[in-house]
Length: 114
Image (cartoon, rainbow, N blue to C red):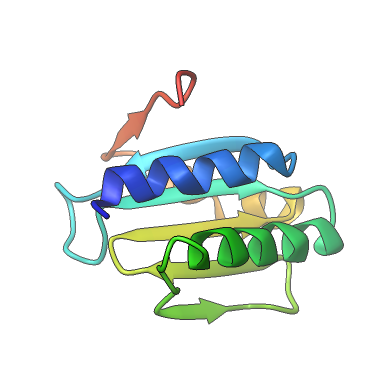
């Protein structure tokens, strides 16, 4: 599955599970670490874990497993799917790390039609 299609599938899962303020950043023009970052809020640490577990489960059903998962017991969980990296935050951690500002030179993708 190509990275844009995987990004769309992950966004659908996050939206179904009530992930908040979903943003997609196309970083492929700035770095080789991935094509896309997906950034989303959960409402609490429990919701953050639930979002990560749901993404992992649903995407695994498509035959795609994450290369790595970091931060399972924190307010920031990272799911690394090679070309797509998912960052799931509590609102406080998202504000603190502010990845949108760090990657402000990248293109932000409109996900309203996904």
